[in-house]
Image 1 (cartoon, rainbow, N blue to C red):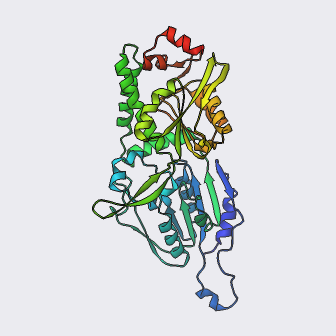
Image 2: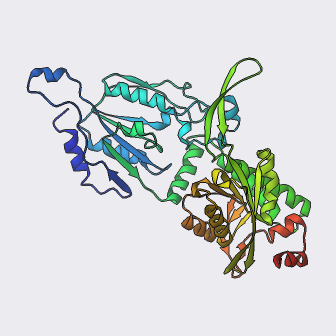
Image 3: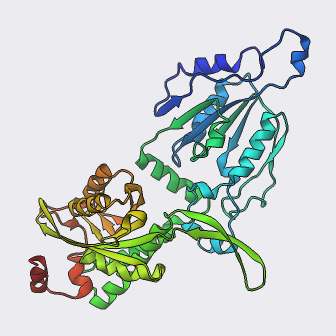
Length: 413
């Protein structure tokens, strides 16, 4: 395998300090069969050394792979990207491609990846698909022919998910990068490399935000554009639910392969502003059960649970928690804590809202790191009265058309 063994090179590489690396399995498994002293050993193919490189989207996995390849310049090295094994999107999925969850394990054809790896490990050349990230197909461009090599680098965001893929690896590397840095990189990459018009989407959302934030906007227009934004948030939140592949027979007698979303689902609205989001949820999920939580607010320091009515089997369901405004986060923490006491796993809760203050996001995520928050805009912060700024005023009053006196009566119940 050249003048230096892969083990020697990897031992040297571990002496270099890579910021954000978490290395495990540093003691590599044997690269192949034991070397007999006879010349017959030359006819026995050697097993390649497999390195797995995982990490969040835009974390710098490609850069790490390039560094490894540079250090293994004396070896035959091949890079296999998990992105090459995305499933082709169906016509229905193409219509909602921007809502498709490409970061879910089911988005990848893992069986095809395993088949390619098995052939490479046994000395056979393979054709790696070239997935086109603009058309969401793998047959638009010619595949890449890959020959057997001494070292195989497997790279991808979920390359550690399937235990069968992990078992192939002699070494695993996870690239840990700050989420804000990854987000900035991903937006730039998606707009340039994937042809996604993020600016157009953001401009449309910002236009609706401009209308609902304007103090002169009528109640009718406020409700209309709030409902449009809420619908977008709800649909995006539903995209984070687990789904499985499902085949159905069409009226033409053909078989259509699609997906079946999680049916064990319910909504929970934080009274009373959260009730403004219920219609959008019902429009997207026919017949969905919706529970209620009422929390009495006293400034920023006191929250008291007044009332709750939740489905009896809520512990077995995924929960969409509804509240259009995330301010300090204290009321949200109360509501989420109640759901967890009722047996709902933290990872099964998705918090949906229209606007979020950074302070509230921090409080919620620090307390419940496995929970997901879906929002349409992050605010500047909170003022001295703990009100979201720039905000949109008292959301419940503007949406339901109540005045200050009526609001005060409700607050005292």
